[in-house]
Image (cartoon, rainbow, N blue to C red; front, side):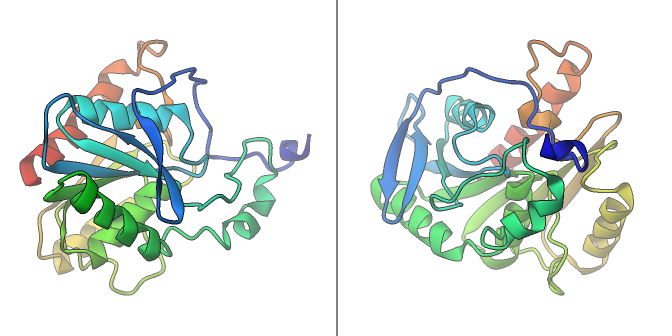
Length: 245
């Protein structure tokens, strides 16, 4: 197999046959998975996919969890129809694959999703949650969109922008101690610079012993040793959103 020489450090995680409680809709030029809470709500969260795309059942499970906690959750196809990454691909080709799928080049999609949430779903308070690729995107949006009231960036850091510490909205950053994608020195540098330059509320939390993808790609039902930390991270996510949205 091609990926034996350079395997992907971003493990797709536990296979899930989860079908989802929401529905797929067309929002202008992009498709999206949308799930609504049982009672009417003016709170919404944009759930931003990882490199495995908007159809990954694990990510839809997180969207459904948000809806169960009172949020309209929308998970758009931020790759706009382009093929998501596959764990069978050779990691050495990742940067080439990423060229037309930059997590810092999603403004057009975000704008139409914000419009949809406001006009079609009655949302007045909107946040973001993103995983991996989506964690980078969440950090990026927190730099640009004051109307986004809160963000939760799960294992993602914007690295290339000079202004990457000037957050406009309160942001929680969740990291794994044993992350092959994000070394802890990058996490430490992010925290030090945010303390110096950021004027809004933020928090960084590192989960000991955990690996990249643990919050949404590890199933709590088949990982009993990891279950307390998986559930704690998800509770942190919800508490942060509840505090600011």
